[in-house]
Length: 445
Image (cartoon, rainbow, N blue to C red; front, side):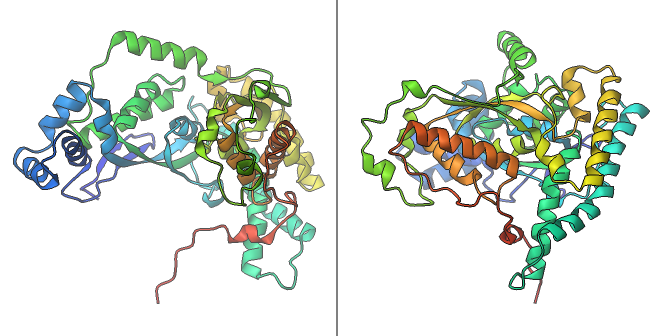
């Protein structure tokens, strides 16, 4: 563990930059590729140069000093960030080239998981602990009610069935988790993208995210001392601060569902066989994204926004989580009647308590549950959108997202009749195969 580059914070945030244990690290790898692009001497000559001179001076001079940003594309790293809120996780992932993973709410024990009380008061703790008590206390009863609704068939494997039922229960009860619940994120990035993303994160509206950006930058400076420490330009910093402070969040009162930009798009010059004859599980050519400008606006609960945000090939605005657009009714309708009544009372009481804290809208997000609906705007090209709707309009996806994905699919089919979409015939059916979607550690023999 001591070979990894770690920065800790006393309030529970933990950052680790992975050292892969190779003699040729990210900086050396970036240097070798840069030399390879500028000389025909061959890799062996460049390895000799690396051995004699090292990568430090090269990276300081050309990548950081002269600003040859493409050199930073050639060295990559993995950063593990633990103990951060769901809100901070989304902020890190709000990047077109983000690669990585986030802990699924299905695999976190929320009986003990920390909920981030940013104001540190007893009132804040009380609100968060009420959400926890509802989640933990009602989950077993919800599981039993689902077993009655969806009894196991004789041919279904019992373990797989149990996992499928539990997955359905988690899909429902997650709506009552506050966005301040903590999670873990892995971020795999190259050196250039890390620096570019941090330029924005350090001006994020949330104090927590600004702190995380500082911790990541400290750890990267330790891990790659010759590739960070870029000069800060006051005008650029002021501009980024303005963008993040005033224009980062998307929060209009969106219509329930709207489509824009289709009137400007024509597929007349695209060979029809590309659109009609595409097999299932096969992507359209990426160059069809030049037929871009297809925009969708819709309401979606914040929990399911976390799922659709994974699609990096489309442009999405970061929604502001508020209680202004209502709690997603699907979650309540899936609860047994007695739990539904308790949920209604809880939502009313908690809403009043949260507003009494006197926080800004940005700060209130930490105390609001993820079942509240947020305003979404998504824009993409045809290839990216076809991939999105086919992947998300299936029975193995959260039902609230399935509804939106099906509406998007219909809009595409209405606009482009020659387009074949391979969609799930029964997108709302409970399927025990959901229980097979797991990562399991194999037992040693």
